[in-house]
Length: 115
Length: 110
Image (cartoon, rainbow over all chains, first blue to last red; front, side):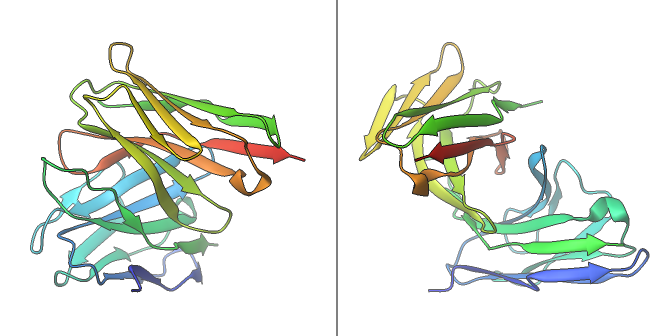
């Protein structure tokens, strides 16, 4: 019963380097999300995937790409990291359906520093 | 676009009640949520309320919803030091993604 697993937990990058943040869920959820959390800004949606094979931009997608590899996995890629991308990144997943509540299950986060 | 507003800080004494307030803009929100984030951790769903309800109680937690004023509150009775955390209000927007407020940091002193 792992829930949502994010790797790595911590990462330091140099400006211009690239990296992929991994996320996997074992709850058979259809929808997956990437948020970033910055002090005083709350959580802002980067990208989401309502179902396998689909992805959509959120509030702050610039500088990021995503891949919904299969139903379980949703990765976030930084092609050329910038100091403004220093943040804590959270992956989440949920069921879908308008007739019932579905809260999100969050991973424990990836703390990324770009120097 | 949709927006969720919260006060940033709340400080209470152990044993007192805490009330965290939230306002939202999307009148079509179906569900509204409260999440808790402890230091260094992800967010945990605390409770939620359906938009046709006025109140929901769950042990020490009471959620009040005033749909006319688009105001949501979370009351924590008998607040304990373990309740110290950041509390996020969230609403569901027209798509599938939750919109979060900036979070209220609750500090409980003994």
